[in-house]
Image 1 (cartoon, one colour):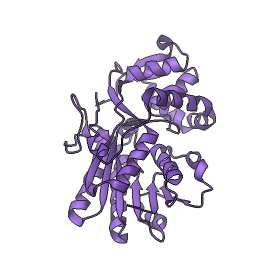
Image 2 (cartoon, helix red, strand yellow):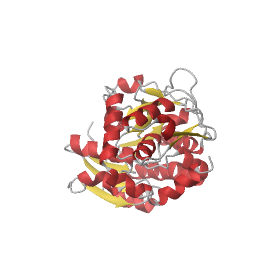
Image 3 (cartoon, helix red, strand yellow):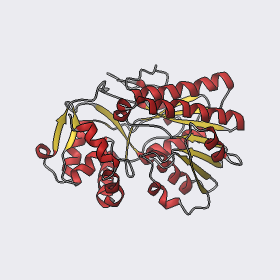
Amino acid sequence: MAYRHWLVTGGLGFIGSAFVRLALRERADVSVTVLDAMTYAANPANLADVAGDARYRFVRGDIADPAAVEEAIGTGVDAIVNFAAETHVDRSILDPEAFIRTDVMGTHVLLDAVRKHGIARFLQVSTDEVYGHVAHGASRECDPVRPRSPYAASKAGGDMLVLAYHTTYGTPVLITRGSNTYGPYQYPEKLIPLFVTNLLDGQQVPVYGDGLQVRDWLHVDDHARGIVHVLERGNLGEVYNIGGGNSRTNVEITRELVRMTGRSYDEAVRHVVDRPGHDRRYALDTTKAQTLGWSPIVDFANGLADTVAWYRARADWWRPIKSGDFREYYQRQYASR
């Protein structure tokens, strides 16, 4: 099914910008409007490659502001893909209210706009963290959500609202829940970009606790492809897990990054007090998405090496970020640990 004008919220962020670049590169008949509040993790440089494309339009605004959403919709859109969210668990522990406002109230505003304008599809981009800690096996879409951080709870709240609108109003919705995503243009607060940039700058990296937390890693291009696939082929009212199938402990990831940057593990790594309520393991069953014809194609070893090479080559992108407000946040987050 063809949806020719897509409103992408949070399109200046990491996964959102990858989605926009992919859409404009691989869908010649699609135009994209990006609505972004330009909070700390948004970066216009993420979409510099498409800024001159006649099919691309940008609107600055907050998804929790109905007037901004109306401006972005303009003369009409066929689908909304909602990437806009507060996303970092550590920041949610410091400031839960911001997460509730964007991830729940912002989703509500978008859903009301879908109903008002008769928009054909609304896709909510969510996370595997809503399932909570998974001791054994892999989470399926029918499993209950058991969020354990303010971030995961706010995303689960948004998901429940999306599904409730489908049941109550017949709103044409879809949800994707992605696993830990990595790749170029990721704001350097998450594990891989934080560790790579610290290592390249000769700094230590802070490993939480024993570092044996397990995450399933998914390249950002595979994640973007999965979202496009679900948007175009998914069944309305359904949830689809998008996972990479690359389970690694944080220590394993750290050792690889240390090796790739030519550092010494004992010199470069500092184990710090663990995050409160830190989930031990996530894992996703992606059978349902694969029935639509999607599967990840980026080899993890190659994807990780390419990511390190990108950050090595693009210090012009990340050094300005880490020299600003980020430095204050980093000190607040890690100094006492």
